Image: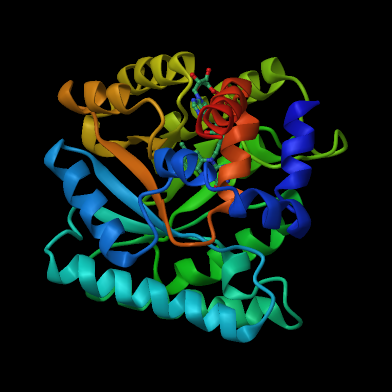
Length: 308
Ligand SMILES: Cc1cc2nc3c(=O)[nH]c(=O)nc-3n(C[C@H](O)[C@H](O)[C@H](O)COP(=O)(O)OP(=O)(O)OC[C@H]3O[C@@H](n4cnc5c(N)ncnc54)[C@H](O)[C@@H]3O)c2cc1C
């Protein structure tokens, strides 16, 4: 119920206006977002690299409303890649991109988003790193997988994302588990109807394990994106069963969530990548993080009370 309310609020411009102008919000945002500028993102990448952690950087901003905003997103990624390159950080960092931020939902948007994504992939390649296409709500899944397939013709290392809450995902994993295919498996962060998605945590978790089995048994490069201790443990056991070395799969977690666990896994020799969001458009991202864990809402409200 609370989750549904927060996810609905994540799409409301009215609530956005209210939440983003509360002074205490900043305090909560800092936990999940590396900062507003490219320099903040570079600093966070450096700090994570010093602890043996890789990064995937996300320039915040989704569901953009004009071609000008889509171009601004591309420019931000180009600037970011340039800075990561000049700081010699691209061994440790790649980028995550939302196609909606490149104009996917605008009229004729698929073509525009594809062109923009190509520009970012080209820049990433010139700095010897990669791009992963984030997955958004289910109405975009087919379009995103179609554009992924087109991009992979020229950039085969482009990463895919699949969400275990969708009924279709085990089948998508079978399609995607081919040699060289980088696939991030997450549970899914949007408010989806029962016609397309499992509604209970148990069913989403069971689906996650089925998908993990497919990806770990396959020939691709699984990226296990979860903070759930059970999923992390099962992924490790499956990797061992399939004789996978640490260089053939990775764990991924979000910036600010279970940071000690991120470092523990890395110390034990696992490949661990942290998803690092940055930029001024953090509202939708923050609301999805609050929706994932009721305790986060309490944390938010407590900050509100203690600062007022
Ligand atoms: C690297 C990465 C990339 C992602 N990319 C996408 C994407 O492209 N598309 C998409 O739909 N979703 C994406 N997600 C979000 C994902 O779908 C889930 O919503 C999110 O990861 C929570 O699910 P969980 O697997 O951690 O398990 P859950 O069952 O939600 O949580 C397990 C435990 O993790 C901890 N935890 C989880 N969330 C939080 C939080 N917000 N704050 C504090 N603790 C928390 C708690 O201890 C919790 O008990 C991504 C997640 C990660 C880690």
